[in-house]
Image (cartoon, rainbow over all chains, first blue to last red; front, side, top):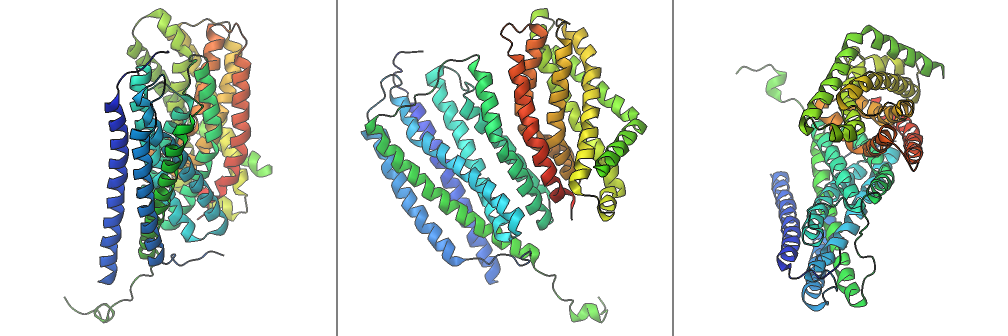
Amino acid sequence: MTGVVTGGWEFVWAAYGITFAVLTAYGIRLASHLRRSREHEDR
Amino acid sequence: MENLNAPPFSAKAVRRAWIALGAGLVLLAIGTYQGLFVAPPEHYMGEVQRIMYVHVPTAWNAMLALTFAFFCALAFLWKNDWKWDARLEAAIEMGVLLSLLLCIQGAIWAKPTWGVWWDWDPRLTTTAVMLVAFVGILALRHFVEDPRRRAVWSSVATVVAYASVPIVYFSVQWWNSLHQLQSSPQTVDGAMVTPLRINSFGMLFLLFAFTSLRSQIARRRLAAELAPPPAPTATLATGGER
Amino acid sequence: MRVVRAAFRKDLLLSWRGRAQGMAVVVFGATLLLLLSFAVGPNATTLRQLAGGFLWVALLFSSTLALTESFRLEREHRAIEGLLLLGAHPAAIFYGKALANWLHLFAVGLALIPVMVVLYDPGLSGIGGLIGILALGTAGISAPGTLHAGLASQIRAQQVLLPLLLFPLVVPVLIAAVRSSSLLLLGDPMGQARSWALLLLAFNGIFWPLCGLLFGHVIEE
């Protein structure tokens, strides 16, 4: 399949957006886990 | 002999992880900016090809995470040291996360390029199989309560799952080659290499940071699970009322 | 070696005694073949092309039942601990069990072939080769299957965990077995079936030793 694929920015944004959103969400989850367990330990 | 105590929680490791995370985010910001706005569009695939600047780094790091998981599993089976189990847990989770992202990115790339969401590309299909395999191992860890069995069994399952990667890849590639002729572009233009490298390192720092943090969380949980039961209180000993 | 033979005979004996269960597994597989044909519709050409694929899918699903069953009695009577206490090497226990499971799965596959032939109507000329592929493929399912069944039998969620853990591992077996079966049944002008058979052989060559080595970790406390 040859030829030029025109446009397609929405796919690019989708790919990058989902990737960074998921990674950010995971990072936030890790941070809150650490914070919660540290409070639990200090108690 | 087995190290019976849970590995200690290291605040220093956590600090180091946050620094790595910061560095990784900076690199990813630079690399993504370059990939999206500075690098030239590809001749045939146009702007869609820019997905490569996040897709290839994800692929390399997913494979790295799963390979690290494999070595953690071997290390645990050999040394019986709990820190390897903590690292294994973190590595598998990161491997699953990155593999999932890889499949999603691959589908988003495939749709405008080939017209279908999934084109059974051998690398992506092997990733999908690995994703299922390691999600299964996470499920295994979830359902086993005894920490020792959990560690041993998930190590065994990881070794077997990882050992199957080459043969899965080979069989899918051969199966697919009978039907398809196209493949994704192999050669990368000079101007495209830089954002690719920057993003790859950025994601590597991210992987290191997340694995480190997740491993510390796992250590905390192990400490709670392996702690000896609390001594009986005076009330119980005297059989006090109420 | 003696332990392997003893374990093998014990499992065969147990299988024979519980042959009602074994027949239920075959009925399950046959039902699957029937249901899968409904998914396709009564188009004879399509059904013929899918005969090899559906046979192996049905066999794979049936194998989880058979594998789970092979460890049920051990679990209920703590038999494996007993064997270990008597000094049996875990790998020997594994090979005895895996060989018995292989035979069991092979028998189920043999029983399913006539059902497949009746429902899907492929040509009969390749049946000899198909039986060979059946042997190789069921061996490929049996080795990792026995390992993971031993593991899963000790967990309460075993019914979902065994398929979840096993199926990704046996993807190469499925691909190779389906491709070679289809070629043998429908015609193989370029003689590719042999290459797929070699892949199955390679898979067995890797996983029978590997799973035997790891089985000890699965059953020891």
